[in-house]
Image (tube, rainbow, N blue to C red):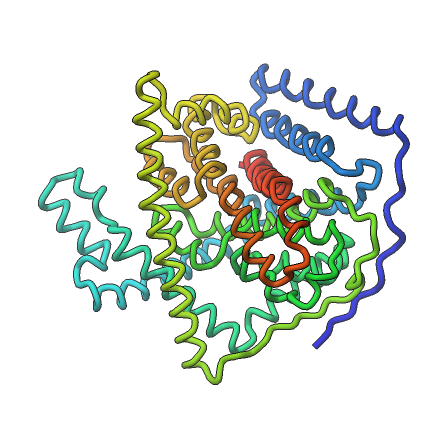
Length: 453
């Protein structure tokens, strides 16, 4: 089934070298002015510095700065700001997302029923928390969640639920609506719009399945958008685990939706479109239906969820052990990874709106997300919830909400490369660029949130 939209207007007007210089000079001037305003005690100027710097970095890293479509950039920023205003500043937006957050928390509670049946009290965080508090006193509350028995089963349940929703066509309708919106207003092709929309709900290797027939003949810019959207989003099953870490569901939901237009904006700044995509002006969603019935769909989703949960558990065991090893070696120089990441990324955290006293700790998390993965970073963020400013916690929630890390480059080359073997070299060439573009997309989302909080 195809949904046709009007063909886009002519491509971007190429700018002269003098215009490029003027843009760079104006951006530097604005950044300096905003930084001075922040030093004078105007907190809203902090994220303004961040937004200007992020756009400046994307502009500087572009493969063809003169081909950047200013309309795409303007709409990307505009959609992010409008959505953030609705969610963070309007009563109805706050109520809607608070309701959605409560519904998600309720939904996650059902996973605990299955976990409790299999694992007994180990599968119920509230029961186990009371047991540990009675045994250890106030410190026992820190042992209320046992990851293997309570978080991993949630991933399995959510994967099964999503498989059922796809079987009944619910997710296809939602994805198509988002895709048509981005295709119309941001001049993105049908294929890349669908992939970005699917990335809101699916993982970085699952979302490209919705556009598998188009991957072999995609333009370089389209392929960059596909990779960047995978880097800048998280999957539904993983989101459920973060909520159990103490991350607010409404902020995670807001982050993944806000980041969608930001993903296209960053991808099109890093690698502007200079060709004519074959799916420009058309949105066509093709999802192969392999399940016989809803029971078959639930069983398949459960199997996929189990595979994902085992991978997550194994990854955490190995990565946390490696971090401990590196910290031990760095200890001879009286250093740690946390200190190094904190020093390097503290200015980045500050530019998003994080108060300076929290910036080193949030900077540590930003570095951890990039060097290791967002799962480790979110688990550490949950432990900081009671010791940092609520604003810092919320901004970090937005900034960490993506798969952009070095290991994801390999995951995408392997996963997307299996769907389109002829593009493997292009995927490898774009990998590092896509990781940075996805990181900046997350940072821009956090910066906008920091400005409005």
